[in-house]
Image 1 (cartoon, rainbow, N blue to C red):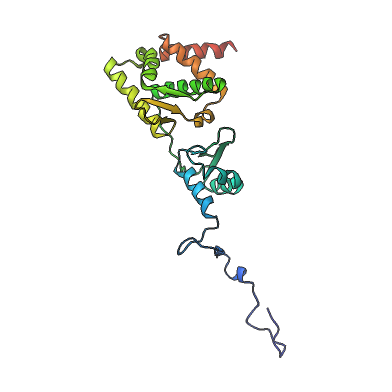
Image 2: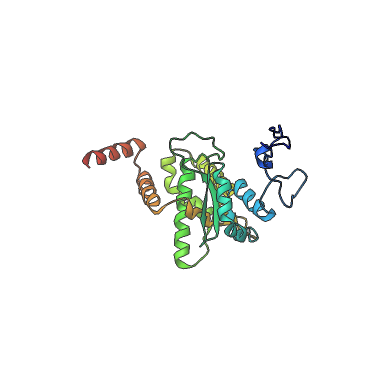
Amino acid sequence: MNWSENGSISDEAAVPAEAQAPDAAPAPANPLFLGDSGELALDTRRALVQLLAGPSLDGRRHPKLWPILVRDEAVIRRRLAELFLELVIDRDVQVAFTRQADTGDLEVPLLLRRAQLTFIDSILLLHLRQRLTQADSQGDRAVVSTDEITEFLSLYERAANTDRAGFVKRVHASIEKIKKHSILQKIRSSEDRFEISPTLKLLFSAEEIQALTHLYQRMAAGETPAQLVQTEADEEADQ
């Protein structure tokens, strides 16, 4: 409040502009389009959109966006956290993607949908992850072919419990699903050879790979799901 010249209290108070409009967001210094109220630079927004569009931001496929992500990692992390998302980044292989943040007991809306994996999908991902590790240790590119994948997955044909034609059809459907998520990237001038994306390194830990390998080896040997569950129960009882 202000005192007027005659000593009475003035009805008009000198209130800061931000206090008068507490919900008003500051206008961007250089708006990119009509009505733009954003604060991020254009290249930072592009990197953020690529992460949200998915499935990943890859330094090889997005050479212009990768340095922007590294430069603005902190602010991008903050923006993703506001959406209950977490940034996963590996600078060595230049790959980054988003996943739902672990919010514990806090109920939050889910922005990302989980891909539903079949038994064949899971085995294929594990095989590709192992091939990626092998190629890295030898300093080679991780390349696989459709025939190689089909031959490997044939070890699990009995566990899949289907006819041969149906099994091959499922294998090809699985390959297409993995390609859709950019984990398998088609090699130019080749119709059935693919390079495995380094993104796959971030999806399976060493412990998970070991556990899944053990499980699938037992299934390939002919053990049924019921036998697997019983064995796990016996092992827990012995501990």
